[in-house]
Image 1: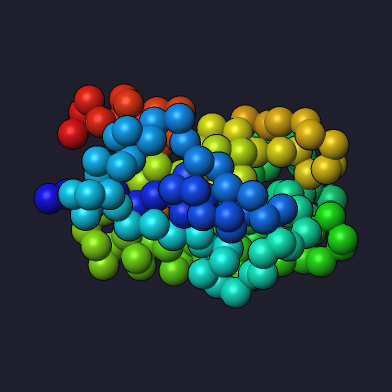
Image 2 (image 1 turned 180 degrees about the vertical axis):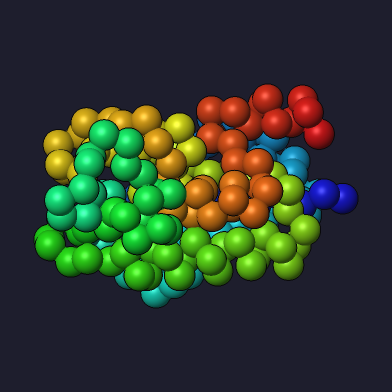
Length: 167
Ligand code: SF4
């Protein structure tokens, strides 16, 4: 049976930066998939060593570069950074987390991933603009960027039923 990579916080694991989870509204489908052994849960940030709770982090442009279309793809190319609200540059750990998640997807043969939108790692349609003021920006997180680069289709948690209909 085809396996699906999934953000651990969507399965109710309290691994988000603020110690919360992001339990999904499509629990019926996720419970079924879990019983079937389809799901491969991962929190890319915790897997690479970040503690919970941890400071919030957002993607910001490298000094002097254009801010208009910056997201996880730019971080993976060294054109943007991931900065904690407390001032730490955590880009290298985010890049490692993205590569490690791609390796996990390969290991399990996952062609699809369901990741939590809005996260600097897992976002697939939006992230935050780097100002830590709640402003959303169209774009993707670092792990999503790396998975898509490797041919994995990344879905947001709002698209679980859409993916279920496709499988
Ligand atoms: S959104 Fe991704 S990185 Fe953030 S807690 Fe959930 S699984 Fe971990």
